[in-house]
Picture 1: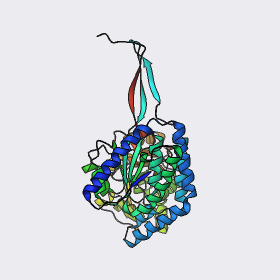
Picture 2 (picture 1 turned 90 degrees about the horizontal axis):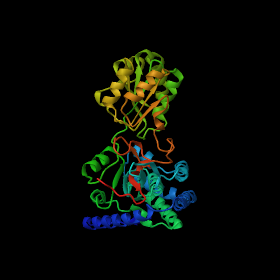
Picture 3 (picture 1 turned 60 degrees about the vertical axis):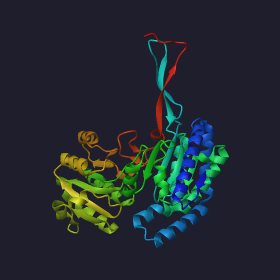
Picture 4 (picture 1 turned 180 degrees about the vertical axis):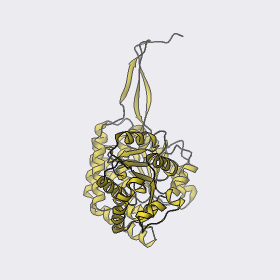
Length: 429
């Protein structure tokens, strides 16, 4: 894995990015044809290196955490920046899960004979070169590298300045794994400069880069979507909803609602708005109010919700659209499922939305009517995650409807081409 070092001259940074893109394109040609066994060797070596380098990874992360804290980084981003043994365990497990997944590259499907005698099918192939621009979370470096390696894509990784030391430490493990497998180091490249000009230069490398994947705050993603010459796989917000239906089990409702919000606040799949059927409000909200109060969660409710949640502040229109990424939750009492669906489709971000109900027909209708990347029945919204979906890891979550939607794993990092098998057939018009 190569690391592009800082250069204060903007023209120099642009030249560096072009050189990096050219090297990535060449590496993609090699990686796209690599055998599954070679890619597996690289992934196993990466997992072993990450596990063995715990002390180095945590020491590097401590430097980032100290600098970020001194610089006034907000609590949510500090939480995402942290790298401890549990996070390292998840990185290692994620890499190994990716290794165990079937290799999608080269798979031929729908192969069929045509009346002319030719066979026509579709082969799954890598996208080529993927640039991932992300903030805070250093574990993205390992996740992105493993997914791109397995799917045969070269990748360019540009992490946030707040995680530079952590990313460099993880990048060292990736480089060692590529060497172990005999793959080119340019297959995974970390941009070592924190100069913002590097992002602008990456967004213009349409001759070298096939897809941009931004992972970070709304401001970053909006900028990339606005400026990029390259297709972008993205989501802007994670305004996730949970609707507790009048046919819901009470204890299940309490458990799912609390976990959806409080398991982890600073994640895009955390619950931001709770919707409760009017007939359930008196049973659900007092108990939830106590649990959230003990957890330090601030509630903002509609007038009907405030009847059962006297400590809740009055919700405003802005609260229904808010992604708090912290211990704040908007609560609204609705007349029933249709009103809940209308609210979700109006205010939601098409990320993850869930219903708690024991009514099968209502569950089916909710699944069809809610227009989101992940729609759930009787489960916490915090399950909207590549590892939980069996993808091993994810490159990001997409709320777009083209090319990939939801957690983007191996299949989302590939495309298809038609293949034709013949035996001397020629066409007669």
